[in-house]
Amino acid sequence: ILSRVKSADDPLAALKEYPAGKTWKEGLTDLLEMLGSLRQPGMSMGQMFERIMDYYEPIFERLYHDDYPRRRRDLDELGRVMGGYTDLQAFLDDASLDPPQAGAIEDDGGKRLVLSTIHSAKGLEWDTVFIINLAEGRFPSAQAVLPAHKEEERRLLYVAATRARKQLYLVYPQEIMSYDSSAAAGGPSPFLQELPHALTQAPAAPAWQPQSPAYDAEQEERPDYSIPPLRSAYPPGLSSSAAAAPAQSIKLGNRVRHPFFGEGVVEKVVSPKSLEVLFARHGRKTLHLDYAKLELVK
Image (cartoon, rainbow, N blue to C red):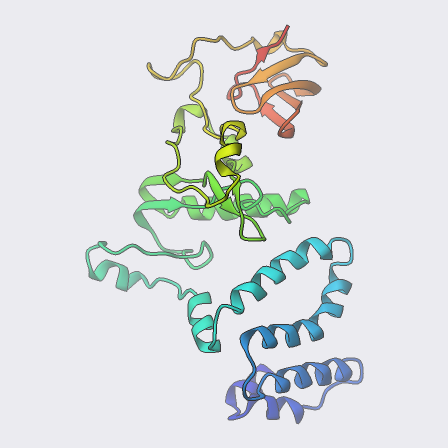
């Protein structure tokens, strides 16, 4: 099929002539009808999106029957973005990201800023790499609910991190845009929370603030998402006044305090140095006591 489409002057006409099998002929016919309707003159980008969704939504609901309303929000956001364009080619130019070319990167002595997806960066290296948007719910994706999915996201982060020859910066936003384009507080990815705190730097107050009438009133109640330094066993200047509880003194049911997650209750002792703690604001977390310096709350 691909060979015929690529070699044809009119791909849709070539597909219509393709001898489809009995089991998928009806599906191909519906697809061709939808693609053909997109050629109608005068269609806006919003109308194109609506026509595509008329075709795709039944398929979408069948494939993701367990959580399609949540996934639909991503498609609605795509439709909102498409609605801001008057030309399909302009949208495709902005939406697509050409992979960086190794030779071109070296031509200017590395003075250019290269923006790349992680997949496109495979096989390439730079002296300094910034991995951005490492926010909770974004990386790993909120849709990565199964352990296998999260491990795949972790492997993807490894690919990104190993693109750096000398310096690597892992960055998360303090403010993120929600699906309705309103501003919301951003927290660090669970992957960042696994790092030793001595390797982290607490962010300064954000220079940009969302233009919301209620923002000033809510400012005092916003949680602090900075990651504090580790309390001990690291270079001078990175310690705090509080002392961490010895691992052997923390028992099932104890109330503990974490420097970032706040207070919680130990629900499970996974291993001598690993605990599962339920935090009031951040949910259930598995913590390694070599890195997570917990205080016993009496």
